[in-house]
Length: 166
Image (cartoon, rainbow, N blue to C red):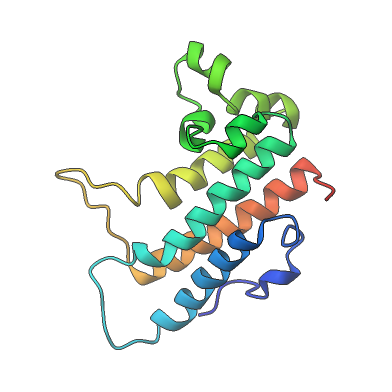
């Protein structure tokens, strides 16, 4: 099964994202399309999601920067962490200083988009690429394909809701 609307360059945010992020999404699309037809079976298909998750991180950083939620230094530097900034459970003193979640809630006049961004981040990045004893963090091919689609759909939703003109 191909990635939903796999003509990535027709998505409304395609020209908004950097070329390296476009390449990552093309790679994820190719992996979804090709790996599902292989005879070889894998214990964990998280590797399919990785390029899309990396592109999602770049998309979010670009979005947060363009909305004025992070500085040029945050955007260009190596210290800003999307997962920390977007986490709705971050301690209040850190949310005020480093957080983006509450700013998104104010900007969007509600939690729908910020919660969707966080949920997609958690499912497509945080929970997927960390290992913890006694936890099964492996995913099937179908789950990997669904996570890539979730990332793309969330990017669609964010671009629409934030009314980015670029």
